[in-house]
Amino acid sequence: MKVLKSLVKLLFHRVVIVGVAILLQAAYFIILLSKFQEFFAFSYGILMLLSVAVVLHLINDRSNPAYKLAWIIPILTFPIFGGLFYVMFGHSHLSKRQKNEMREIGQQIFAVMPDRTPNLDRLKEENPVAGLQAQYIYRFAHAPLCRNTSTEYLPLGEIKFQRMKEELQKAQHYIFLEYFIIEEGKMWNEILEILREKAAAGVDVRVIYDDIGSMMTLPYGYDRKLESMGIKCCVFNPLVPILSTRFNNRDHRKICVIDGWVGFTGGINLADEYINAVVKHGHWKDTAILLKGEAVWNLTVMFLSLWSFLRHTQDHYESFRPHVHQPEPIVSQGYVQPFGDIPLDNEAVGETVYLNLINKAQRYVHITSPYLIIDNEMVTALSNAAKSGVDVRIITPHIADKFYVHAVTRAYYETLLEAGVRIFEYTPGFIHAKTFVVDDEYAVVGTINLDYRSLYLHFECGCWMYQTPSVLQVRDDFLLTQGKSQEITLATARNINWLQRLGRSILRAFAPLM
Image (tube, rainbow, N blue to C red; front, top):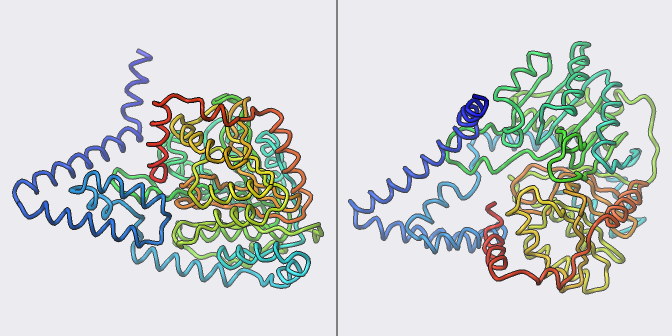
């Protein structure tokens, strides 16, 4: 009886219902095209011409070359259907109303961001190379370069969880949470209890979670449950049973803002595996950064801008500024620049930030990432840095969360190892941290993976730091993690059978569509 109940529950789960509906639509679409071809002889020629036109469009398009290739191969393999499938599902679609809303929100963000050009000018005088990197982030992510901000690097999910609870308990005015995954369990339940108490006490509590990210971890309509507790809630890009690629654009950010002057970001979602309360793929290694001071405004604006888009409302931004509720000024070392990246502006901010760090490195680049599914630009940058004598090291998981993604990650090892890049796999389990540390001067801690989804399709965020105490903490944590990891040699990378090599090659070709 228990097995039967579980089976019935699975069959009627929203994921199954939506998946079956989408598959039926795809099948119907293919059958319809086949019938269309039978009745109209000229349709074959029209569809072929359409496929040729789509291929020519892709060749001249500004999108990533690997993404183009991943589409061109199936289009040329199935020329009758391929072009039409790309026209219908090959890129994200925004309605005219949505585009206008996003444009207006972008203008509002620019208007409310403070003038931090003195910080940029000062950094350029201290270090022109660092100044140019910060200037790029300011220009294309509308994220000011900040000082007067303390940073605390949090090397494990358990530490972030404890620090987050401590800061949430102190909230007096507002709490903003934006997370890709929320799951009922120890971590979320303890946080939720604090949120419920704070909302009852009059604190403005708001939550955004991604629908696909939380689809297997939260019941349908969970936002209404939170609203009944006095917690305002928005679900990002709700999944509906319609065949469309607009669901590729997910909210992968992890943001917590408390009273405008305390903020968290990093790789850690609100689920129990992130604090090792449950074991999914061995020990879960993840990281976060805690900010206090003026740089938290960048995170606040990221949250409020998306909230305005989802809720179709406008907030008075001035009341949320850091200095409004900050008890006393914060003076700290270095520069801090939290930034966001969105998939709708044709500017791959996250990837460019990473490339700038790699290309300007003089001594070392140390990277942790759960995925290593990178385009030619990133492969070239990492390889050239290593060939030039820069100590390039990357730590990836040893235990995979998705076997096919891990296979693609390993498909890049041989090329990078041949160039002199050192690669390590975190043998205790799964490393979900997304960190860069360079030359004891720069670090980035955030949500941006080294894969196509993070770099091109998702809403992401990160924190760029220059000469803050946390930079050396990120370095030390990398070295500690490396000590628990197995180095992959070129011989090991090459020691695979022909079937594995073939499978990895195929997966690598279609990696941008995964």
